[in-house]
Every structure is written in structure tokens, then in C-alpha cells.
Amino acid sequence: MNLETSQLMASARHFTLQLSSTPRGARLARLLAAEQLRRWGLDHVVEAVEQVVAELANNAVTHGHVPGRDFRVRVVATGAAVRVEVTDTRGDRAPLAGAASPDAEEGRGLLLVGALTRGWGVRHGPAPQKTVWAELPLP
Image (cartoon, rainbow, N blue to C red):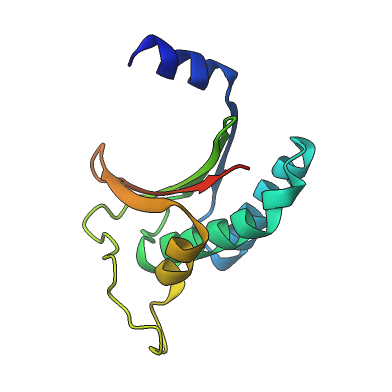
């Protein structure tokens, strides 16, 4: 990590939640992340971040669920972007970019995430975890 990156991370605001891997946990992730953004004065990105958290948390609960294991949501705001990270314990089940067509009945959530963000991806590890992240630019 270079000096510029470490200075940026030092001035970043972080919010982390560990929630049960249930539909209720996914809803709480969305609501609590939105409230934290409002507290940080980032009202102008609340709606988009809410949608991204909702999609990624729902995917973690639906596709990354392991009985008895939670999922984690992390939101980091810097001067340039808001980064959303959702970590679950199914590293063997990573999402695929472009796996669904726009007119498909299921699997369109990541198309929405891609449309709302400047990028998203998957980071594996430590085993058995994976983290799906997305970044939204700040004006």
C-alpha cells in the first residue's frame, strides 16, 4: 500500500455489520447501511447504495447461505466513492458477470448492480469466504 492509499483509507469512513444469513438479515443490511449513509451526510447516494446492498445481501442469503454462518456487510466512504462489500461463506459459488439476460426471470440483480456502479467484482478468501464488492462514485 502506498502513502496515498494509506492516507485515503485513514480518512475513509467505515461501517461493518455481521447479520444472520436470512431474508430478515438482508433487509436489515439495506436499512442500516442507508441510515449510516444519512448520518455521514451522503443522502444523495442513499437510494443507489440501498439497491446495491439489497442485491448483494440477497445474493449472499440466497446463494451463499451456509446453515449457522452469518454474512457481513461493509460500507466504506471516501471522498471519491462508496464501496459496498458483502462477504459470505460460500467461496465455491461466485457470481458470474453477464450470466443473465435483461429479460430473464432471475439473475438480473448483478445487471442492476453493474448499471448503478462504476464496477463490481469478487474477491476470494480467506477460505471458505468470498466477498462481492461494488463501487459507486461520489460527485
